[in-house]
Length: 268
Image (cartoon, rainbow, N blue to C red; front, side, top):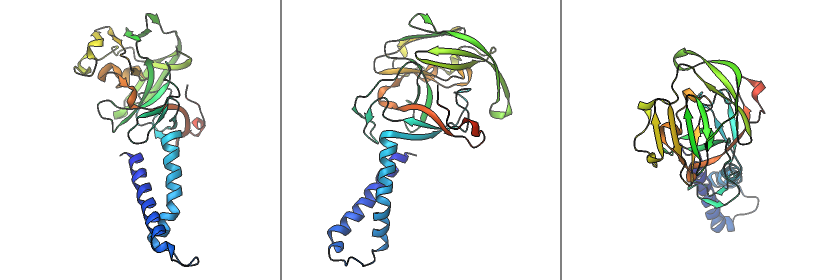
């Protein structure tokens, strides 16, 4: 559901009703006369809808984390805020960049429209920038020939779908300016080869084998991976994220019904 489009349609309808009344019967209506119910609603809700539309479109938008692909950084049930202007001011609905503000940085946690179905919003970590060569072999991440610095951080367990209890090894990892924790499972491969799409755009930029993969990120695109490396459907499988699909930068957890101590945490 495109909530932004719904808001826009509601805004237009309320505005048109208010404007038509102001240009017709509203001109001759007594100041103390009661407004028709439809006009009263339109006049009351128009500024509220306008404020919500502008905030969601240009400043901040809330999202809920639906899966464990970003564990342990983000947990199922986290409600997060996304900065909509961090990577440029974009026109609502069409998502075209109107004003350049900044570019995604390596390590940013980013919300974007899933390339295979733009009606879906995904959240992953930015691993590769345009022109980068990203390699992930034997569970070791390398960017432009330089291994990403990691140190062990202990085990992490969680309940996955089907009530399966998963235990993984976590790592302190530094990508760009971001120090975060990533997780792997010893019994899982670096990439599940049969799940790799064969026809995503710029597929020729990637090579795969039993040890992992190597991809060169094309201009205007980004390579995204989940922090829960072995339970993430990400760029390894469906390719690169074009700049036009970017929604914004995730920066804060503003609510979690089950874990109040997570409220207010900034996303690393």
